[in-house]
Length: 184
Ligand SMILES: [Zn+2]
Ligand SMILES: [Zn+2]
Figure 1 (cartoon, rainbow, N blue to C red):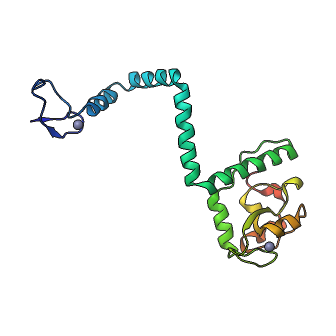
Figure 2: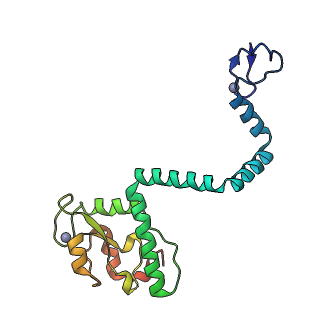
Figure 3: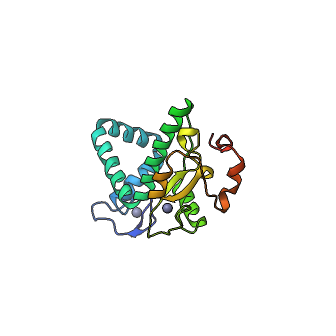
């Protein structure tokens, strides 16, 4: 019996390798080499990636698709963030790096009891959508302080008017301008 240098497992060396076999498997031999040749192995990996760039991209695309299928809401939120940032940037000429997270959105909906502020209907009868209390077109920010939950029909009826029916967590925004949002 020999003991694997990498994982410590006891193994029976093949009869041709008695005394020279140090690893239980090829995988362990490779792992051991990588562990002791970090810089070289990184360089080799980099060179391989450079030669096989199409494979790398394909792998990334595949992983992205799997992830998107797993977390569709998260990716929808990213798209919304990007659109909002483009609008804010084109309105003000400044660039923003803010992002509104899915968790923050879930919290807003929870705080409001999953009820649309205007028509008082509740999920799942309606679907709550993101509404900017101060519209982006009027200098409002895409951040949790400036977002309330409205159903789709109330949201589209409201259009670019600045009106909020404050829920508990939005009362403080009544006296403040959108400029005070942390994202501005
Ligand atoms: Zn091993
Ligand atoms: Zn509504």
